[in-house]
Amino acid sequence: MKQVNFTRLIIIALVSIVGYYGLLELLVYFESQDPNSGIHNLYNAVWWSVVTLTSVGYGDLVPTTEGGRIIGFVFLFGSLTIFAILIGQIASIMSRINESRKLGHFGTNFKNHAIIVGWNSFGRTVTDQLLQADKQVAIITLDKNNIEHIRDAYPSSQVFALYADYYAMEHLQKANIKEASIVFVNLDDDTEKLVYFLNLKKAYSDLTCIVSLDNADLKQTFLAAGVTYALSKNEIASKLLASYMFEPDVAKFNEEIIAVAETDDLYDIKEYRVTKANPYIGMYYEKVFYDLKRACNAVLVGIVKCNNKERVLLKNPEGNVTVDEGDYLLLLVNGYSEKKLNKLFRVKEGLI
Image (cartoon, rainbow, N blue to C red; front, side):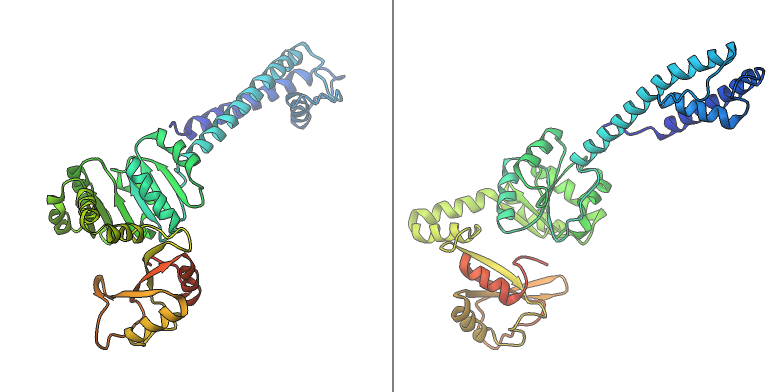
C-alpha cells in the first residue's frame, strides 16, 4: 500500500502559498490605480479572494481594472482546481487510513492473547477453539486476501488480523507480541518453522512458543532449540485412532475433554491460576479435591508448581501438597461447573 508523501504535500502547499501571495500583490497593484476600486490594500484583496475561492460571491468588492479582472479569472478557475485537489487528497488520505486500519497496521491493544503466525485451515480450527475458550487471538498473514475472510468470520473485539511480513520482526509489535501469552508458529514447512522460531527467539527471548509438527522425529530438535511446546499432528491423531480401536469409550471421552465444553453436559479439562483471591491458598491438595467436588461438581486432577520459568506438573499427587499462590489447578469440569469456578476463583481459565 502506498504511503502518504508528506514532503510532496508540503512542497505543493508552500508553492501554493507563494503563488497566492504573489497574485494578491498583483491584484492590489492593479486595483490601486483605479480610485473607484475597493481593493486598495492586502486586507481587502484577501477578503475578496476568500469570498471568490469559496464561491460565496458577496459582490461587495470586485476588480475594476483590466489587470485585476484577469487575476479574478485566475482565482475563479483556480478555486475549481483547488477544491478538486483538496477533495481528491482528502478522499485519498481517508481511503489509505481506512485501508491501513483494515490491514491491522494501526496495531492492537490485546493483552494475554494468543498470536498465530501464518494462516490456513488448521489455524482457523485452532482459532475457533481459542474463541470458545474466550481467548483473544491476533493473526498475522502474508496473504492480503486472508484479511477480508478473517474480518468477516470473526468479531474484531476477539480477533485482530494483521497483513504484514512476519519475517520482519519489528512488524510483530503491531500484534502487541510483548503482551501475548503464547505464540503459535503455524507455517507450512517444519524447517521453515524452526528457522523462524530461532529468529523470533533472538528478537523476543522470553516468549512462550508452540509449534505443530508434520514430522514427529523433529520434536526433540524443536524442544532443544527452546520451543516451549512441540506437538506432532500425526502422533496425536494416531494415538486417538488406536484408542478408538481397543477402548472406544475412553477415546470418545478423551476427544471430548481436549475440546471446549460448549454446553453444561460436555466436559473439559481446564487450568486456573491460583491468585490472591483464591480461597484455597495454603490448603492441602486432598482437602481442595473434596471441597471442589462438593461445591462445584469439579474434579481436581492435578496441580502445576511454578518455580521461575520451570513448571512441574503433579498429577493427582499424594502426600502433603499444598496449594500456593502462583500454582495452577487442573480440573475436569462441565459448562455448569465452569461458571461456578469462575466466580469462586475470580479468574478465568488459562495461562496468565
